[in-house]
Amino acid sequence: MESIRDTINYVYEDKLIRKSSFHYIIPAIIGLVFGQISPVIGGICISASLGEVPFSALSTIEPINLVFSAIGGLGGVGCGITIAKCSGSGDKDAAARIFTRTIVALSAVTVALCIIMAIFADQILLFLRATPDNLAYAREYLLVLLAGSLATVLMFAGDYILTDDNDPGLVLVGNVTAAVVNIVGNIVGMEVLHFHIGASAFAMVFGNLCACLIFLRHFKKKDSLCRFVKPERREGDPSLWASLKPGTPMAAMYVMFAVQMLVQNLVLAKESGTSGLGNSAVIDNLVLFLTIFTASASEPVMPLASSYFGEGNRCGMLLVKRSMYHLGLFVLVPIIGVLVLFPQLFMALFSVQDKVMLETLPFAIRIVCLNALFTFTNDSMVNYLAATEREHVANISYAVQIAVNVVATLGLAGSAGMDAPWYGTMISNVCACAFLLLVGRLFRGYLKRYAENARVLSGGHAQTEELAEWRSESARFLTESQVATVWEKVIEPFLAGDGAERSRLCSYTVLERDNGDKAAILRYDSHVRLRDLLLGQEGGEEDEEELSHVYGECIDSEFNTLRRKMINFKAE
Image (cartoon, rainbow, N blue to C red; front, side, top):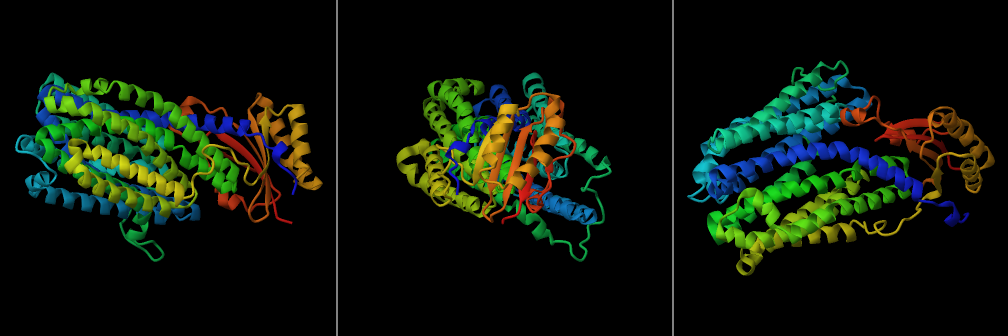
């Protein structure tokens, strides 16, 4: 085999990956900022208007919120993936039946659970470590939350279902609307009108209801897979469980968070009662704030790595993993550094006056901020595993994380006191990180770049000198007729079309796949407008797995603002 040391230049592919990731991150940050800041604003308003005791009640409510998130995630991810498969097979009627049955099932489970929780509200809140001081506040908030929980579940499920049904722009509009309504409702209800804590819960559920009403516009689309029909199962349709099964990892993640929070409340309430729960509420809001950055920096790993995985491009997959991780650290480290040095900046948002909280929160904020680096690392690796069809390893890592967290937190409660939950979370994240790196074999690619199965990797702006270099390098790994085909069906059409509009940054790759097939790939920036970026683009990605079996023809597709022309050659 020819040496590839002098035919590999990672610079241009790296630039395109970063450019594409920013296009993905911008809408994600917008959605996350609104989605995560609105509950933080609610906490700030409750703390400022009613004081620390009502504010501490929020920590006893959050595990219940996570249970409803798990239900929405189970139905949303499961149904979304299932109807996407129906789209691939062309069975739109089956997709409509699956969608309707999922919505009916989610509604029935949510309503039944709400009735049970309303009947046993006090018992549930005491189990979640509500104290005599904040029980009345927690009860008021919970009853309003339960009254609007169906809207919360349907909004959360709709985020995933509508995205998979090609309407991400409507999802963004709905989520931003829900957040704005929540924020305005909290400010007016708590700060202006001085209502009780139930007003904050009402603002949240009313915002979610507004989002659901906006989602109804989706059903006016003629090509929508999601339609309400008779909720029956016909021969050949998947069972309800089979439809929901793809959503189990998402549901498991939220259940894990709920268990972690329960253990956290158990330790803190035992140590310092209401003050401990106040600590928990502040930290919960800090985690929501940090999630804006950890999630927005780690989520692009999944779509970008999936695209390269579909090509059979192991070099590109590792470049995505490395580039996204370095970008995330670049964003996270300054924010974490400021909060580690000045934790009082975050405490000031909640008007903390309690002596116990003033004494213990600075250290808690510091360790939780440092732990965000491990959270981001784990999220990046889990998304990479999901993109490369290794979800089972990611699911096991969740199990490892929750088991270690419970054992470490309860084990340290006697010696570490109120800091035990933060130590427990840090230890569990480190163990999950070690598991993913060692068992998942994910070390490779974080520090160094590897050519893997790329034989040629170059790029530029398709100038005459660059084209001559690409052709010369290609000839070392492709036959003369294959090189001629690449130029005839890929390079020349590009130069006559998109390449003629303006100078575009390109990358050029020659791959040799594991089965011996070879491919030549030209990737370039499609100059997407901001409006298309936020509201979605016409068209979209094609089925990479199917396209990899098409030989001798130029495959033209677009994914995440990058256009790609690819031609495959069958193994000799």
